[in-house]
Length: 217
Length: 106
Image (tube, rainbow over all chains, first blue to last red):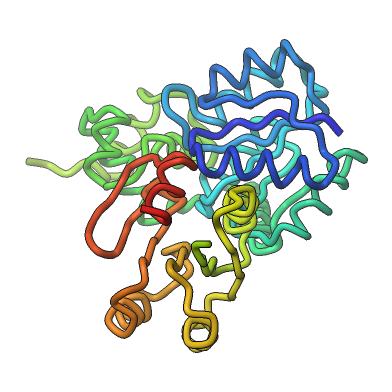
């Protein structure tokens, strides 16, 4: 099995390379950020890419999307400490073949890798429940109401973000304001668009106005 | 030989183990993150340094070990924000394997 590792954490990167090599897995390349990961993956054509999410410059989710555009059959497994739902969902939407946590023990981690090589998906057990909840929630929002009309509700966080969008804040400003990552804001916006059947920011502002979500100053 | 007690059973700790075991001047033993188990290891084996993943340990447990074994180096690694913290107060951002070994042996 030929693996490419993408992680900006020097200690973890070198340790993981040792661990895989000791277990008979060939590490054919490493990358310290998303762009390097894209370049080296397309150049070296590994069997599996182990991709961290938080990396400087281009993050692992963007890198996954770029790789999958060029090489859809490439197997990419996110290897991260993030248990945040937006990261998990965005990674899967980007085409990742797995999502594993660095807190996983080495034995199960190696078993998951062998499974991915055979074409199986790899999701850390503690995250499978999160994924089921997301799917179940999406099913609920797709069901029509009793009178045939769509009854869509936003979460408190989504309402908060929609209000800030309507007030003209950029994603970066919203992320600072709510002390979350810009990636999380984008994820929630995607959910808002999907739930309210919107296509863009302008429609979101209009929807907020109609629903009385814009606070009058 | 410098004795190092490495605590935890995560992939991150397993990765650290491979780095530290490659250094012939270091003698490595593993322990889980249960503070009582760690204390037993310390009392019996008397390590020179204890390396642990901070996310897996309660701060109070770490401080209590630091207080009870003041001559032992206590090194915490935070994989989320890539920090290495020596509980004497020194810290390094984005540590390299060489830095970690230097701190253990220094």
